[in-house]
Length: 585
Image (cartoon, rainbow, N blue to C red; front, side, top):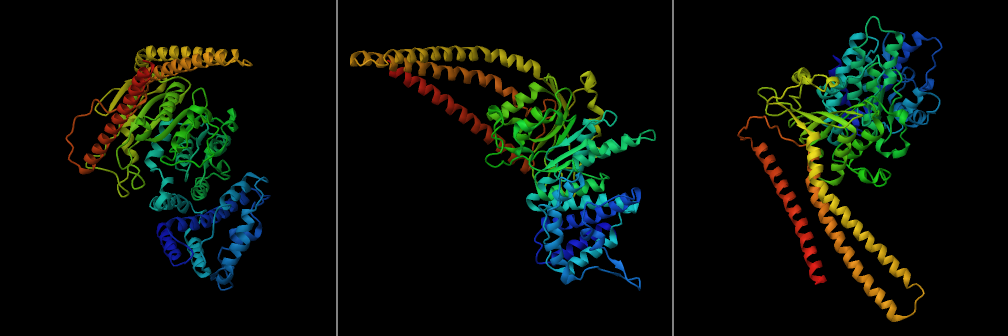
């Protein structure tokens, strides 16, 4: 029986156990067991290399001393613990010991503690658990090169199963996407460039980065080059199950001590706690979008970037705190909603991105790339920090011939990105070799911005002038009030009060006019940050697909609603202005 079949048979065994409910629990159960088995076999290798090696796991709880099947005198393999004793041992001894291990002793102990602090043993039937262990013992020999290679396929199977496990699917990014994004960011081993994913999930981007760095090794590479890879990879994951999967994934990819995979909430760390020396050369991520952080998270973000929407919070953090200031390279998956979102915070974020980074490339992906988790259209943004954006290139990734959408059985393939790779060019020469086509087009953002600022400036200047006039009236009001402090004469006080009321009305009128002028300027300026720019070179196709027509209809309804809201705002402002003038008359 091959490894893939073994994993399926293990999951079938777990389905018979009353304590394991659903795919996510089955995968969680299997993964902590797989972690201990793989770790134990890696330890055998480390012991061969170093006779003084000491395990961070107490002897009693090492896989070899409780789970591994041992041969009896007749050569038959038998369990070390009977089924009736197994579950109490795991629940009452093994888990408490590994959860309470001292993480400060060593990086490896930190990894083990983080793996087990939120893990659970869901199985209740000792006999069934022994059957699972027996399957793992028979199928997985990490010392065998062929088995080690096949474990990568097993892991992909687990991730695909996870993708179908309800909300847990949010951890999965198709391998083709992770490979392409890492390939384009191109972290350099010789330069010792660091790579981070602050929402690393099961580690897809990080394993792609490890493979990319290892491909740069040659016969001339030193032992330091090989060891350096482990220290260049950094990941943070908030949720327990994907963190456990990621840690095991790192072990499977030869990262001996995956202590750089932190089990914590990136967004929960105080804004000012991020240090300059933590900034990385390359940041590649698919931040969770559509979700919101709990109250209290992100309250210390700068006021103009304050939000609870996860993707927006990650973007602010990436630009300001995580990427190196001079030449840090980023690649981020973002939904269409962020691209065209017209809320103030989304506008401010895109203004920040285009001011502090060169957003040189946007790959627009078609529907279905992340199916079945989401059908939302997504984009791959590539940018370099250190200078503002002047030109944005867009590339519309097409479906392969004969495809109308992607699906679980027909996912996006890495080979499809060869057209983008051939077209890409070099950032050093400003992508001089890029050409426009039916799939590629560019936007002169620098000119767009200058024209928008020039058009908006008279309105903004007027708003500032009116607000200054209102502020001058506020000062007069304060002076008048100060002039009657201690005055008891009623007539004199009334004169001042009447004058104060008049000045306040004038100040309010000025502020209302200033708001109108500011709004008029904003209306000319902020639309330049709508990055949902349609392909001007695409052939106009008649749409017959009902799903596409429905999507187009919903987009049209959204545009109508936006226009209605804009008209309501303008009408309300005009009416307020009218009634203020009437009151003055």
